[in-house]
Structure formats: structure tokens, C-alpha cells
Image (cartoon, rainbow, N blue to C red; front, side, top):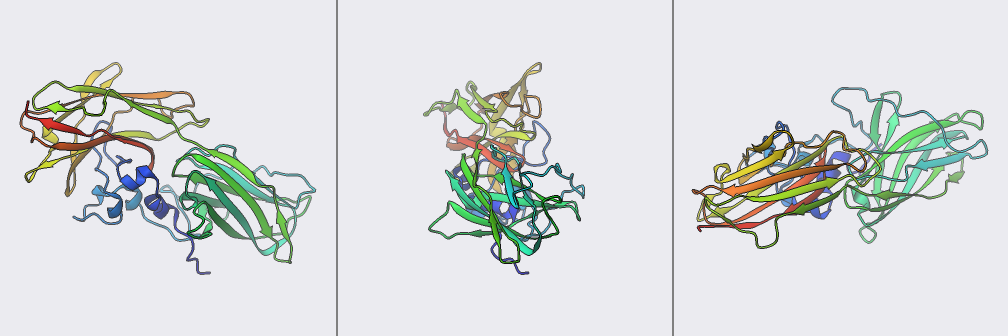
Length: 365
């Protein structure tokens, strides 16, 4: 079967149109060690291939290998752990659907369908309505027990006039009945902005019957992030005192975040002289260790730089817990006099959660 409507999960991570992702600044992630720099993200219009051919300069979302519709989203270690096997509904329900009440951004949330009627070459359909974000940014997968893999569902947008609506489908054939229920494990992930998700599930049994389940809702949320100590108009002087500021990430969801990361990025140029890592002194206060230098590295062929901040909270970040990143920034005496586009970012894995620009001019005195 040719599947042209589905945009692969990994491709949609790169194309999602949230403010943070569109700015291309939200993810400062990579293979760098803690406290070392990761590549500066590319701008939104340069997400596919870096201009200089250096893969590290592109965001992680664009650099990941894409997979086709319905194809296997394989893990690096091979087979993936099977989801829980419990069925839902009751013996009188030929078709039932469940959805976790919360779907934190960047985390997979559980969902499933249970069938208690024979289905031959049928199709399950999930009609999605989003509130506060684009349906195109939503990802849905099903677990295939035969291959022990999660695979993408076939996705089809309703149309450009309805960016809040989308349809996900997958084929199904089962010899199910009231005393022999068959479950298909699903999972859903939002990667855009907070809001609400509504899913109406149905199945065509291949025998001329369509069964529907009641529509279910899920809250789409994310940790609350704040930046203090860097008011508008902040300026730094060459060779002058450092400016201290703080990035705080509080997990206000009901799920733990296992792969939280934070970063700092900066870019500046004046009269052909690009701002270099030696021109900025970034330090981070690590509890029990005091102030430590965080090395900035250039972003490949771009005259920008970035660093991955040192983790300061226990992983995973539990509900109600807060990760606090205290930083201070100073400018070397040899730095050019220019305006610097800089900021901080927070993500989980390769999904953006937050970014804030913290621009500043460098003054001679």
C-alpha cells in the first residue's frame, strides 16, 4: 500500500510550526558531555542540510533518519519493550478506546483500542481535534507484537482550512469476540504548544459495520519555565563585570521528564568580525561545586556558539520538582563591539519545550 499522506514522526519533529521551533533556537542538544557545548541550532529555513555539510550544525530533529508512513520506528537497541496488556471496556462493547488524561509535550502517552467483534481487513480511524496547537504536530503510533516495534499510524490532515483537525488510521484483522477481546496498544505525543486534544475513535470491521467509541480528551501541557535577572536593555562592557541570571524549570505536569536538557546560545558579528567563544565567559553555579566555566563552542560553519548546561536536578525531573540553572556571563576585553543575539533553551530529548532570547549589546566602556 502506498502511503503518501503520512509525514514521518521524525520529519514532523523538524517541521512542527510552534514559535520555539520556528525560531530554530529551542534545542541546544547533541552528543556533547555535560558542561560542554552542543551545536547551535540552524534557523527554521535551514533545517534539512547545513550549508557547510556539517551535520552537527543542524538541529537534532532534522538530523535524525526519517522513516516512512507505517514503517518501523526502531529503537537503536532493537526490539522495544511491550506495553501493558490489559484490555478496556466490557463484554457488551464491540469496540472501545482509551486515552491518558494528560499528554505532556515531548513524552509518549498511552492509548489503546479493544475489539470484541471479528474484523477482517478493517480499519481503525482516530479523528483528532486539537485546541491551542496544530494537529500536524501530533504523533501517533501502534505497537506491533510480531516485530516488537512501534510504527507510525497513517496520517491525513483534514485540510489547510482546518489545521486543528487530522485523521490517523491503521489496518486491522482480528478474530475477536465478547469472550476473546483483542487489544491494539497505541501511544500519542504532542511536540508543539500546550492545549487540549480530543480523539474520536471508530472501526470499520470489513463486513459493512462501523463501531464508534465516545470521544475522549487529554490535556497537553509542559513544565513551567522562567528566566530572571536579565531585564530588557541589559548591556555588557568589554572586560567588565559578569551579569548573573537564572533559568528555572518546574515540572508542573503529572509525569516525570527523564531527558530534560538546557542550553545557552549566542551569535554576533561586527565589521566582518564574528563573535567567538573566547569573547564570552559563561559560568554556571553547580550546587556543591560552586561556579564552573561552561565552554562555548562554535556552531560548525555558522559564526554562532552554544553550550549544553550542566544538569542541576535529579533525573528524571519528578512532578513538582524544579531544575535551577544559575549562570553568569562576562565579555572579554578583546570582544568586538556589537549586538549579540543570545538566549537559553530547554528541551526533552530532541523536542523543544521552551526558549527565550536574551539579547545584549557589547559596549566598549
